[in-house]
Length: 388
Ligand SMILES: Cc1cc2nc3c(=O)[nH]c(=O)nc-3n(C[C@H](O)[C@H](O)[C@H](O)COP(=O)(O)OP(=O)(O)OC[C@H]3O[C@@H](n4cnc5c(N)ncnc54)[C@H](O)[C@@H]3O)c2cc1C
Image (cartoon, rainbow, N blue to C red; front, side):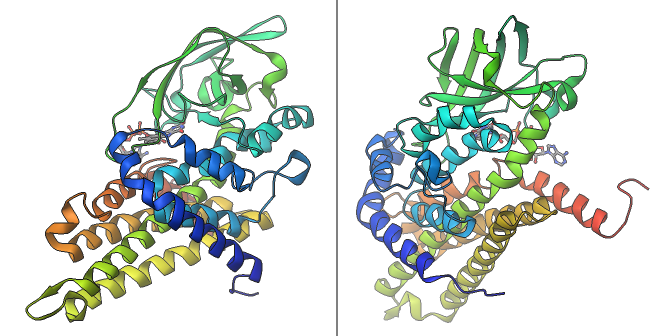
């Protein structure tokens, strides 16, 4: 076992870091203020082959290992959390196809996703079905060689700009969400599809979070993923892996805040000395850094285990997301403290980072849900029945 990054991973980090520092960080404040999706940075990431990192070579991807994918998300998030969502959600949306798609479906969609020509979104959440995914209501009714989708989705990242979605709907309402839900690939130029509303958010403000409507949207049966009734299983298998992207995003945001806090404290003088020379500040910085490093190592350990196909993937990925998200929130809050009043105003990036960090405790399963997953896995490992 080696805990050291490979030379290729070090090289990748250096490359993405330079790109992020030079091209992404200078845009971050304006993206946040304008609340506009950074199409220029999407193009930049596509040109640099950073949108194809999770796709196999045969589809035009670069098929990076899990730790390398985490490094990419982390280094982009260190500069701008909104932009880091572009590769993260490209993987999230594609994962149901990776999990359950046929060769033909992969061949049809992956090359356009790997090149960045198309964006994809993952449409699971509904107004009444957040943490409780199985209470989904959207319907898919079979009609000859097609399905007809009716219903709506809520809070879908990139939902208003994606070319294609992986979407979940009940094919058997009687059986309910766990057994009666199916997964579909839906092209967003299908008649009856619309994205009527984009949310105003606390953070990741350049990333459109959309409500989606499906009004008699006709989807070929060939676009169903797996069998009828496989939807819940596919959604869970997706989230078990995809939440590592959010965990990597969280440590990137935390690291960005540490960098900004150190730089500021080294310049700012009070009581005749640099703020960074106060021991109280050094101790805060030490906690911020060591906690972020611990979270980072857990994310990499989880990523390596996903690649190895271990049987307890949810234990690792939920633990990583839990620790990384909570660390990002704590560290960014402390970074604001290190900057004093200047931390609270948007002339400095830490207030944006604090707002951005909050979402990592909420999406792809709230922290409470991560704890449920970890606890269930822990009890199963220990041979303790779930209910006494
Ligand atoms: C910016 C943003 C982007 C998103 N992107 C996507 C996306 O791309 N695709 C997608 O499908 N969804 C997306 N989501 C949805 C996101 O995954 C949900 O918001 C999240 O899962 C929580 O659901 P909820 O908001 O309905 O909260 P609720 O489930 O209503 O939870 C409310 C509170 O109750 C707690 N709670 C709920 N159940 C339990 C329980 N069993 N035990 C203990 N506590 C519990 C929660 O932790 C939370 O604190 C996004 C959300 C946001 C805000």
